[in-house]
Length: 395
Image (cartoon, rainbow, N blue to C red; front, side, top):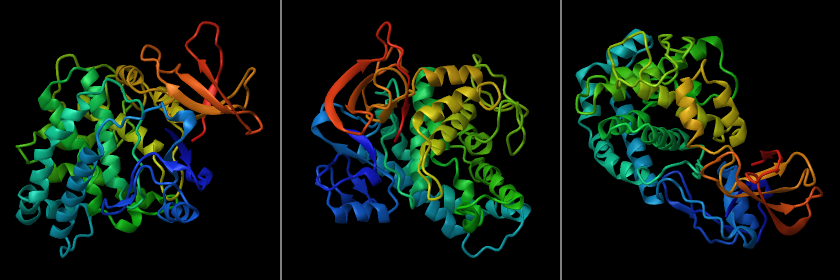
């Protein structure tokens, strides 16, 4: 299986992953042979990339960190929780940050959120989500196909996947993993208190609009902070996921230590980011930059990988980035790549397998020459001694 741009899809190709619609109904099943009509349907729905099965890559197995069943369950839990909360504020008029915070802390909003079957179901289903993540040691790739309509909910699931794989590497205990999962699922819920036109604006935000967007971190914290059953740490993920190590983040300009907290996670040091929020900040940027949006395609994973590396020490906890680089490959499995130097310059192919000891040096299967002509597959192991090939992701 391999990932391609929808613009490169051709009739006769076989779909490699099931594609779901707005209500998680099946749009196209895996194994469907693409037609011009199907390709047009996917383009009209805003899908930019898809997965296909073909002879050259039939042995490349792309295993999502979580099953379709658990992914759909989790995404629906988040979707329903958002909708319940939106319903509770439908007839409330509040036009300043202070009045919105006051509104959030009214019994009507608090109780309708905390007591809603949707939120309770989300909390109950966390364990199923964690059970699947615990089987993963590395993130071979985020293979979800996000739709524009459901981006917020699918983004929340994928940030939870990334954060939990990092947390597992750090050997955090079960309680903290649960707090991370709930906090990540709801890290952007404060956005429902911001004007939807600003949230979905396709162009650049004005300074005033950005000020309003930044308030979603405070609104999310205010909504979750008093729910003792989930722990106060869960509320600090919405609160702190846009803070930075150097103190230039928001909403409070907190700083980090650039070290992993060996003494455990604390929540009382108000001038310091907490570890699970530092994990959330990193996961949020990685998935947001990688994801396709209506106003721009996602960045290639190798570019995002280098953005994370470059942000170590200033934007992200430096020691945490070191951990991230050990569980997330620069070139994910099944992604299309292009050779940048040497004998095979401008040849293209796919990442065929990962080297767990050297994640940035996978095996590559070349499928097309520099003139885009199909060739007999050529396999190159970038970890082999003497191999100095450089490449870049192109999908």
